[in-house]
Length: 198
Image 1 (cartoon, rainbow, N blue to C red):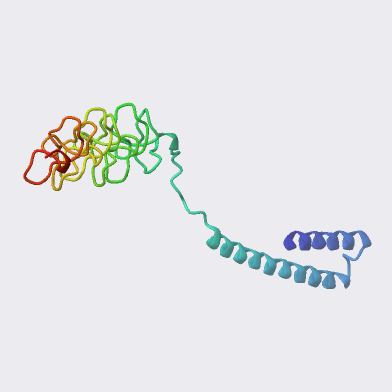
Image 2 (tube, rainbow, N blue to C red; image 1 turned 180 degrees about the vertical axis):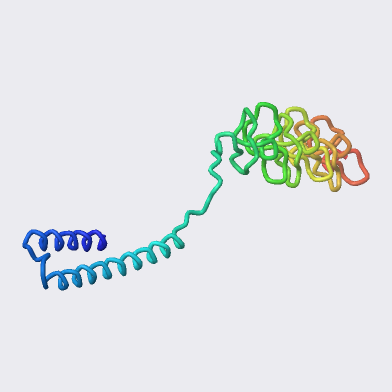
């Protein structure tokens, strides 16, 4: 910007001197020295501007980046793998249940809707909140089995260390229930009947 201003001034001085007749005689030396001084100042400004431009370019050189367009619509919602055609997730992150579009639970092959509800189990649910390994074996019960047993707490006999299923309308299995058909109490020790029916 300064260079243009000085160039314009220099041009104006030359034009004025020609028009005023100062270009003849002794005034020529004075005019020439003024023109030389302006040219020197113009040259100094040009060098300074060039140096500043070089410094500026050193600081602002653009970093060449890969301009390849990435189609994020094909990427998994959790990683850079391609998603499956029916989900927002890749095979690594998508629930393995057919037709399910949800994300797997960490450490499982299934999403919350399809993973067995038992702790540390990664199996698929089977008609209830649990897999067949953890679901109560009582027909139409969808509760979790007791640890090491075949039935849930509600359907397991309440006799000590017994893992058998309760008889209907009793808290005991057929082995531990009083033999009186109208009684729901447990047997007394060493007897087939409860204390009331001995």
